[in-house]
Length: 295
Image (cartoon, helix red, strand yellow):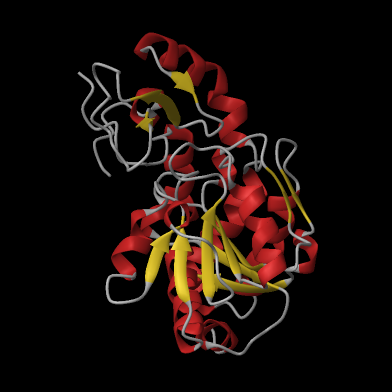
């Protein structure tokens, strides 16, 4: 009864499915303007949220198309490895970091003091809870003092509420966004955006300059921005999220596709991500697309 509630995924919405089905257009392959238009529109779209406030994002106006936040991670890793940095993240954050750092020096933020030789990745909303990590502000204070670069992973931004961060902090190095968890189907198109304070002429900037990116994905992303609000998922599914969570005896997360409980829960106590929290992905229970079995 409660299978397939562990892996994070977008809500399977018939409205979104039908829209994307019509938005995938071959004409975008030959467009000379689509990537820049997508980036500029997505950047403004993110800032139009009524429910979240990324103060200072406007200063991160060197924008690049990335194939999901994971591509932005890879080039942040590359840059920091060249500087011989040790990687840090909170327990419960995106497992991709742990997998990527297998052959490099890294440690959980909970397990050792910060050093000026570190580089930090923090998801906001936090991957394990869908809200703001309780230790984030303290870590950012220390990173400011020690001049430690911080990557803010905002992949879940468009399914969340009550997010606040001051991006004018000197430690903030990169902010990245993705549509994958907000609009089902876009995870196959890898529609993302990297935001930096300046063009650093790294491979991501180079790929964008010569347009070696998915223009069809950029076109779909642009059409989503033009036809859905940033807070679409919260506005449409928040009330249903609360009802589903009540039925499952779990607490609603600030991210609409999640509910939260702890290790004592009879059905979800085994959903261990290395913390005391147990994250339950209820997106399939919010779905209005009948027969949607595809991932």
